[in-house]
Image (tube, rainbow, N blue to C red; front, side, top):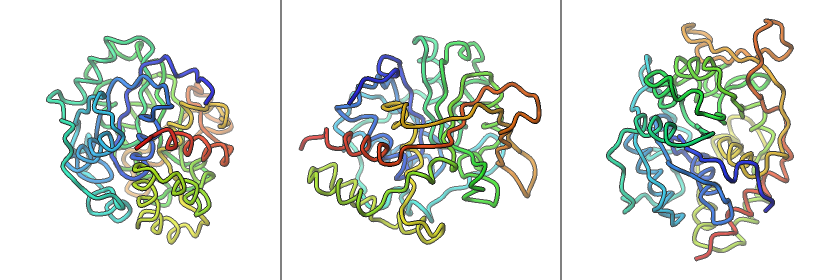
Length: 319
């Protein structure tokens, strides 16, 4: 795979695994990725924090990457009670994989403290959150001195033209902790966003799954089982689509092949209080507010190139 502008930049992946987080991590941890991953931090979201951190450690172990430290973070949003998505991802948060207690340990340090420490140690750090933004917002609030040290935030969350996937107007990650999202979008950090507008344009079909299955490796068999689980059936039943979006994997695909996505520069505000539109991302697509456009909002993707990147990453794992 061609080199990427992100190959030499330190990264923190913040996640709530979740099948799509798991696939994103599989791609990022691949022997072919070349990414400098300093930590995986975990937040409550798709399921409870305890299950999410275990799932992250399971995926790292399946990928053979005990060298990347994993930290557990916030177990609830800043202000609202935790809303989870077991109906999508399964009771354990990761349908399609045999659940086990991983040997890879959980680090004793809290994820928020780890984010702050690593940001202070590194230059031009990139944060890659694919769950609720609670850990990131807590770090920015507790240690505003790290803001200039963060080169970019690349996140999965939000929606504009596609509407919401948990309410009519809200995408799940933003809905769970809108106050955290408001802090992140308001921090003045360069932010690249992969919302439902683009993730719904990269639907994995049986044709792609068959390519993964044909690799016939331990990891490809694990991934195939995940992709044929209830997770895939849920989205197909809900959205009537011919395939399943792998939302969070868009962030890693961008790190590996930025050229396959197209963007529009926008301002994003988040609704935090309204019972009707909590978590709505107000995307100023046509600059009607006059506010600074500090967000690169993904609007298009070369879907076949996206799946080529994913399958190339999985093919690099050898039994």
